[in-house]
Length: 289
Image (cartoon, rainbow, N blue to C red):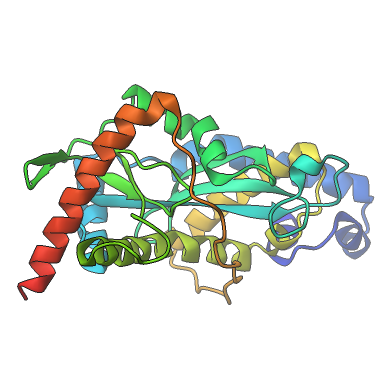
């Protein structure tokens, strides 16, 4: 019953009539199942890649796609539409009330980190900085042990995101969003966004497969666990190689570049050096072909 609700987006009232149950009971059962999925099964099926085997598999696949070495994932945010809320904080840039979902995806469109902590009016960078994932990266709690040398720069595995995220050694972003950089920078940006397209497709697949996320009809207190439960189920479907349904098309990204915070300056300047080395190396390799 709950899987039917999540996959088709049925309301509790609709399912209550179908199963001859009280709608309150349908909501209670839904919340119980999504809580179990988002807590008990989350650690089993949504895991940050730390083993060398998983890192090698991911970085090789992303390099085949982008020609960029040591990419291990792609990050993006997406508003999940909810019912009307009195607070303007939930109004996203597309004009509807929502909560913000942040995911990191691998090359197989499987999520290895999920965060639902912010109302829809929050920008991607703020949500990222408030996440446990960001704090673990900044504190050095997550250290990916597969470093390479590119033009004298020591580069560990990193994720890719768009210009809405801060540039850091572990998060590469485009030089600019308008294609006005040097040939090497524009080439790098194109390849980086090609890598980022994996997470965009993963989110579109998530919302296409679990249609409840197209217009979430649960109480606000149960919104985060319902979204996370759908992400866990998404990974289960990817592992089982379930047929992919028609994708839910996300609007084109229109956010503004993020501002640099004082406490991130050393990360930013280090990230700048790494990004330029990667861009120059990429341009040299592809120009020589």
